[in-house]
Image 1 (tube, rainbow, N blue to C red):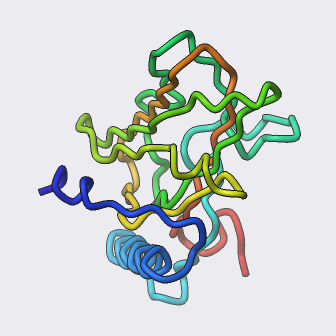
Image 2 (image 1 turned 45 degrees about the vertical axis):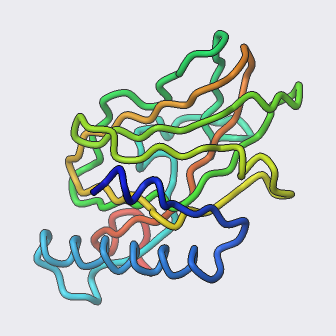
Length: 182
């Protein structure tokens, strides 16, 4: 069923219509999981934007693109942006879109992102649509959610040797006060 769902995935340049509906369902899902698994009232669960640190990126990165992963591929291979990372305790994440940058050379050889959750490929998204958009971003009709303590590997595929930047767009549900206390 998972593979069938993935084949029907839609890509949208803005967070409106079906993309917004999918995003809203995903936020509801991670909020409810956080509330239930952490035994919290609805007022004590907050939703915030996904940050690279939520997916294992070191928070000590200080370059201007610290919200992105910069990677170099060698030829037509995949590069694990994240390999065997575990989502932090008390955190429930959702990836609902991607933003890609051709890098300093403007290279457009990025072709696909693959997300492995709990040792099994959960999503594979083609990046051609995102690259064709003015903002070089897109949202998916099938966001992926990851519960606390879930193991995750994210691979990016390229058609040529190049340096790329990739940012994941999404949301996080967590206990109020962990990162923000609105």
